[in-house]
Length: 327
Image (cartoon, rainbow, N blue to C red; front, top):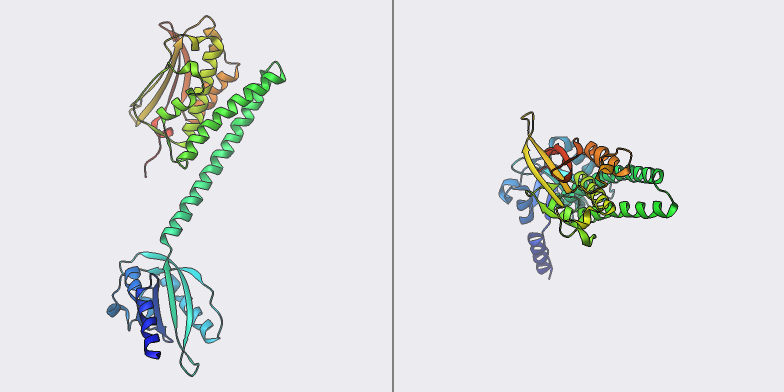
């Protein structure tokens, strides 16, 4: 019966997904299961009989001394996270549980360690931390934008009702961009998708010609260009251009004027209706967004122009300021 029990325990140790390593009080490795071979890169015959420092980085040697001291005092050692070293030199983050090994007489003769590789968990934790920092940064930026929207809209609204309606429209425009970003964990959004998303709520804007190369925008560009497209749409509806043919959103990538890198150009064009000259005024909120806030956020510049029966808003920015940076 005892033999069968020992055989079952040995089978469990060998088939375990966790590395199970035992050592004596001198720190010499006594047993080494298959999972330990996979985790640390040493075969059993390469590890057994060697000091445990075979897999302990130099900066963790004191940890082993403390563990042995706690075991000798009979103290409980809680599961903890640490680093161990692979055969090829890689540092492996692990979660480790250590238990004392005692003789039949109750004398401490060594310890058994159960280690689990937590590399993936640590990478997930790192990515989540970076994502939360990015979201926090972007949200703070958007608070500033929303405050500017409220302030500028209040200055230019004739009534509380008009103020409420225009604030709702602009905050919803930001919300649409946030929706797109949340669908991809803030990793980046195709410009074509962003433009289509901003236009689709306006049925009369479905005839807008949209064209340009594939560009994946980073979060900052998504929020700012999305806000710009919304203002352009509202201007077109307000001044009657949305009822005419000839509206377009186009973009291109071209060499920078100074030959250093590439630049991004986005152009909105619409028929120059009777009141188009009002768009050129610099005291409206739309002008603030289109000619100051958005270009500044993208390290670029923007301006209105009228020619050939069209009024155009053109944004120039370094491609690096709008495009997702690939790792």
